[in-house]
Amino acid sequence: MNRRDVDAIIAGSNPVDIDAVESLPLGEAERELIAAIAAVPATPPSRGSFGAREAQKEPRDGEGWVQRRLLGRGAHPGRRSLALGGAVATLAAAVLIVGGAGGGTTAGPDAALGDDITELLKASPTILLDAPGWRVYKLDEPFQSQGIVNFYRSSAPLNEPEGAKGFAELQWSAEPLRKRIQALRSRPRVLRELAQRESIELAPYLQRETTAPVLGTTAKVFIHPESSDSPLLEGAAVWMHRGRVFQLRSFTANVADFKRRLASLREVGYRAWRAALPARIEKRGRGIFAADPEQDKGEQ
Amino acid sequence: MDMRTNREEPGGEDAEARFARLYAGNGRHVMAYALRRAERPEDAADVVAETFLVAWRRLDDLPPAEEVRPWLYGVARRVLANQRRGEQRRGRLSERLRTDLSTLISTETAPEAETAVMRTLGRMDPRDREVLLLVGWEGLSPSEIAALLGISRAAARNRLHRARARFRKELEATEEHQPCHLGELELRGSR
Image (cartoon, rainbow over all chains, first blue to last red; front, side, top):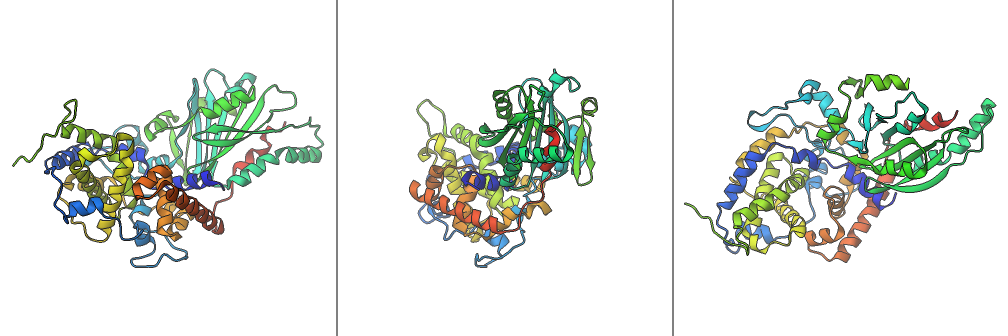
């Protein structure tokens, strides 16, 4: 785990998403606040006043909310297993919007989905393949910690060979990154062993390993021929993002195309994410599922 | 009684307009910083109000725009510390913001909140935790952390380096991660 992994894991624990805060309907309250502050004398506060102290004083110690809330009031921050509690921990499943101020409502499609589905959607990774023609056709998220989003390119139907170039699958899970990388590295050996067991003739399986940028970090990329008689390549890229391991799989004509497709992944705000999903979204068990029936049928 | 001043910048923009612009560019980020650390959403509203009150009083001395957010976080940090010590009286400036935030933010406990990462953060030394969160949650650079904490860049980098190492060691020592289902993809490429 390098320093970027550490930062990504901690970023993934962020209890308050800035997109969610920016979408809060607080305009009126903030206008009132700004006006109230601007009405306060702008002359510097007198020496020793709270205003002077607050601008200059250093905290007495490093105690923060975590110490108060997780360790108990007055506890020494020793090494011990703790259960989470407290205001910030309770926000960790994303800011839960329970209603608008001043009688506002959550109008629009989400009002019809229900609070539980909306809550699950808002906790999902909001990553789209931002390239011309690409759409989401399926979301399958059995748990909040793992799921799959399937993309396709509308100009390349799935039931044609060329359509393989228009398919991409983004998965995420809580698996350690090193395990995922190890699994991908060992894929040629696994396939050879499978071929031997099944008495299948398998052409030499050459897998190339490289790296490529994605979502502000660097992914490990594994590229191999789709099959012995196909001109297509299958690429798999893995990286850490907000504490989860992500993997993009896609078939492309060459390595450069795969890297471009990887680089076109974008993290968007909730509204854009929601608008990109198929119309029908349902709760399945503890998770959610959405599929465009026409395209999902094409995959079967 | 109207106590407003008419401080002017070169170019004629008055103080209120400058202040409104300052809030527009940074208010929600300071709010997110406060929400992540305050005990209740209402307390976060007070932190936002007090932070920008300080900024209003020091409007002529603010750092350049690209450096002002870490400065605001620094003020919010001290306001939070005062709040925890009970030294901060609830202000009247933020009444409506308090009400609105407490309405909008649910404080129901989510089971998913109790992750290995949060437990690890909870066990760490507060100074280590602080720099890790400033990077991970607020996205600050070591230089910005140095400015916020009032320490040298070298000291900020060293503190961050040690904190990451300690976090990594703590996290790897804990039970973590669930079984992966990505392995199902392994053999799809075989024909």
